[in-house]
Image (cartoon, one colour):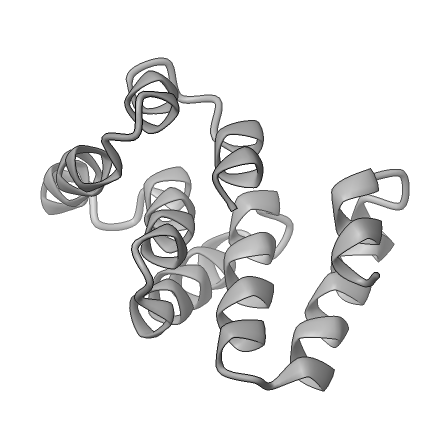
Length: 116
């Protein structure tokens, strides 16, 4: 998941933390950002992916859904939602999320990979 996490997060402060393995510090930074801007789609989506990385699919699901309510085309949130559903063994729903993502991003190789 770390490779996907780093590849979908382009935030200049966040990506280096994750690359260095400081995922908890990345989570803390995102939570701080959301306290001042609770509708920040990018932070919500990134927090979803960080939740998956930290083994918290419930948090990942919650944050991905919040991000997608704000922007249904947010690619990191699509990965977060699909990953959270997959972790919950809801494979059909996870596949449906990735297929919906492919309608918006038909050439995205990682979405295709998630479908196996």
